[in-house]
Amino acid sequence: MRELVLFNARLVDADTDAPGAVLVRDSRIAGIVTTDRADSTDSIHKGLTGLCGTEFESVDCRGLTLMPAFIDMHTHFRYPGQSEKETLETGLRAAVAGGYGAVVTMPNTKPPVSDPETARRIREEAAAYGLAEVFQTLSITEGQMGETLSPLESLEGIPVVSEDGKDVEDPSLLIGAFRLCARSGALVACHCEDSSLSRAARVYASPALSRLAEDAATVRNLALADAAGAGGPKSRIHICHVSTETSLEAVAQAKARDLSAVSCEVTPHHLALSTDGEDSPRPANQSPRPVNPPLRRASDRSALVRGIASGLVDVIATDHAPHTAADKGAGAPGFPGLETAFAVCNTALVHGGVITLGRLSELMSAAPARLLGLDHERGRLREGFLADLVLLAPGESWTVEGARFFTKGKGSPFEGMTLTGRVRGLWLRGERVFPFSR
Ligand SMILES: [Zn+2]
Image 1 (cartoon, helix red, strand yellow):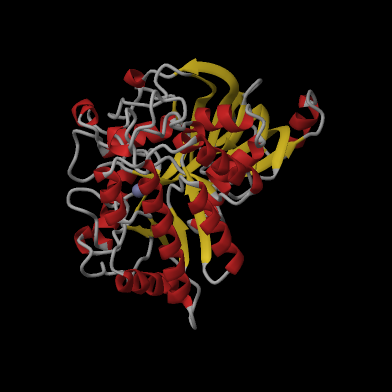
Image 2 (image 1 turned 90 degrees about the vertical axis):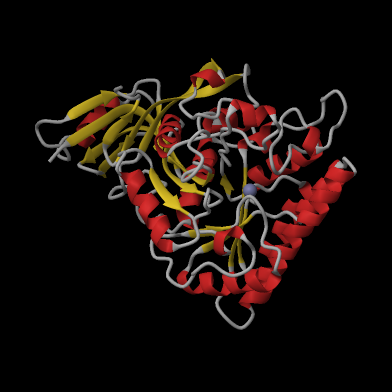
């Protein structure tokens, strides 16, 4: 039996913010002691006596904050098939360096992941690294061709399906996916984009048409989820990377209708950046910072931030999308996000006075755990939960240098910016995995 005590920490999760200590026994949290007096380490130590055995490792966390490890619902590891952009190992190291204990990897790989056996095999391959846990999604249609459904009948160990990278154009297929997934409880994560409107947005170099491509698809997909659930179990629909005010309004309306189980995510880059202030507003395909969905107007960004504050937005997900320098130079959409997510959100939202650190923990840990069905043992500081713990210096400033990232994707939109909040350590199942020993 191995015991570890992390003491003198500020303990923060979705419903805790107090000085205290955490006792880890083997892979789980065996005890938590908090005090409401900032300097009362004596009482904390007394509280731990009796919980611990005689010999244990201890880590003094003075000045630092201990939170449940983050969980990313939207990551691209480019595995299999595009090892020049990322590998399982580089992706996992980036995740761990960013404070993540689990990531959901998207299926738009080469070839796409369309069968449960392949998804489970990738999950096992990832586990061999002893870093973050991987939940591999399945594409909604076979090979992401949009013609027939992937085998969605047996999704054991696969909490999410998604066609990410594009939308499912055929409504009948999407309704079929909602119905099959409602039976197993899997979440259908929708990349909302009307491809014909996106094409028109490129032809006419129109940011307004680009927004409409997202808005129209969001409204459609939410309505299809409602229709699919009529007379049966509710559809579970999760809207990926919401980036416009109108799409977020559509999510709010769908939540109010309550005909489907609706959730949504936003990315750190859409919360922190907008196109206002660029020399001249440019269409997505000519942006100096290409990403899909594109960065939007400041008014859209403000609406997303309001949605974070009001509780309308469920989750912050990175959409970590690494590319080679050459691909990025050619305008490939997507940014690396895992290693900057906490600092970006801490700077823009917590230091920006929008939310508390506890609410950020909810957005990055507790809520993803709930949506993925992992909340019986992840996402909060709670006795009996997995000892997946991230140690943070929320007040420490640093300057982003993509060249120092662990991911192969070095082209960050935050390059050169000074952010506040740094990941100082990560334990997964009670084992220290970051900083790396080699
Ligand atoms: Zn997407």
